[in-house]
Image 1 (tube, rainbow, N blue to C red):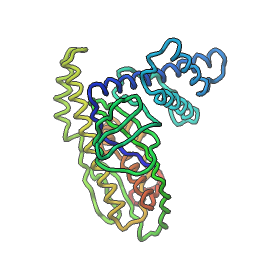
Image 2: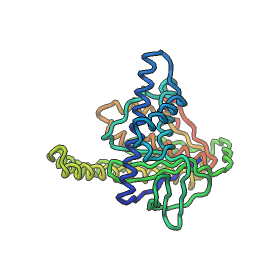
Image 3: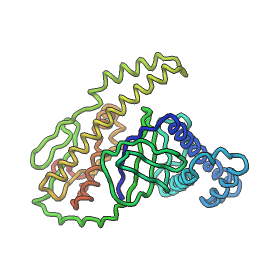
Image 4: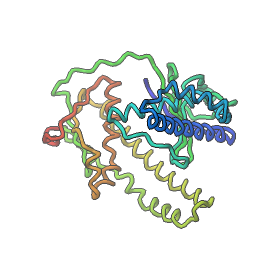
Length: 324
């Protein structure tokens, strides 16, 4: 499985239909969560996903005909997400599911079936959308499309994430050889120092845009709540945040790709950092969040898996910098 992200450019009618999908998916999730809570309080038993699906179909016919305006598979995906949220809660991987807010910063819906991509014309075809949605396919893929997730970001931009089953055999991991193992120490002054002595400075991306962001947020604070000018300025602030996030992600991709694809090492040793605990330090929380160690480790890990290399974790209570 591999996920591909592309930018979408929907027209006014397509944006209106997307907003309907966002609202209906959110409504079904909140309705199902409320039903499960009430049912458990009354009967002390769980309301299964199949029972919720039956109740949803009855509700669409009786008092919620407007739900038929959107893709039914997207509504069922919302029930699946709720079921997954409860599974994660009971296994201790997440907190109890919360109701989704209407004015949340990010909205999304899924289409698990009947999706078509045309690379030559640059169009994405989704159920309930009569015409293709313009997209920027900066790279092609081959394989079976499993799910398509459409998202509206806080900046107002739309993007699509396409999960593809490429039917490739997993690459066997290379043997761990000490001479071909590279130790990596992550930090704040230098983003990365490896055991060969190479150093990569911390770009401090958020700090570079701090003044611009502070000016935009100050202007936003002076706008009248509920006004159009406040909404425009909120989008301006969101675009600055998105720009910072894109620069950071580009930097992390380049560094991880340089290590995996253009390096003699077949294994990489990393400290198992307690990032959640470190962020609680009020003095360093902003710098730690900006450097984004967790995202870097995630990118390095998936690149190593696809290239047959190893990521070795060193214990938190070991002298990790010296060990690396």
